[in-house]
Image (tube, rainbow, N blue to C red; front, side, top):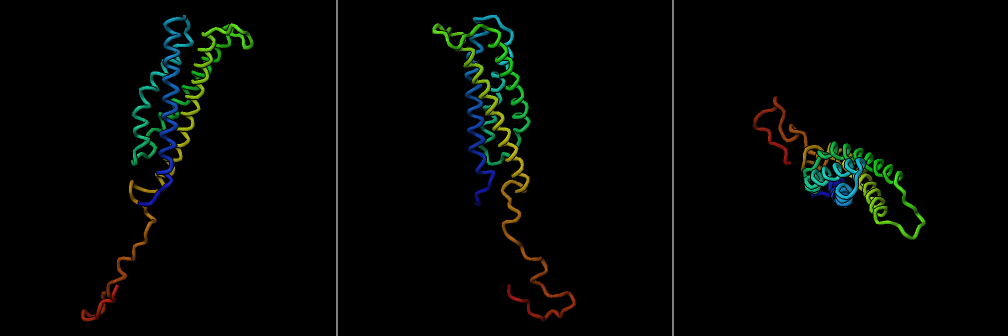
Length: 178
């Protein structure tokens, strides 16, 4: 069986979704801690997006590793890339409102946690955007290859009438050898 561009995309798609999932798990842990310890409504949205990403990207990783993946997860990647962009903006605004000094020796752990959540929310956005681009390429190449497992231009079949004698020829005419 020939190696196709779709086969080359599968490992990249799996890695992009795995990194997006790992970033979502980290954001989920930090924002869950912030919801229980601090009072902030801007942290709840990234927490919800992280939980949804953690739930939906496990099947998406399985589908991206399958040979029959034909771009089924493209809507999921489009939606979650925009949701992660909004989560990153909410966390950046939340950090901007708090008093976190860059050059002070007594940097609090809450500022470190806030910046870590912001950084990993951006990474989750980046990896979902990468997965979306890989899925677009996957969708494009699956449309060019035809049905799964079929390669329409792999071999040319002869015309069906090439080996037959003409209809008006006598029956005792020998068939040409193929």
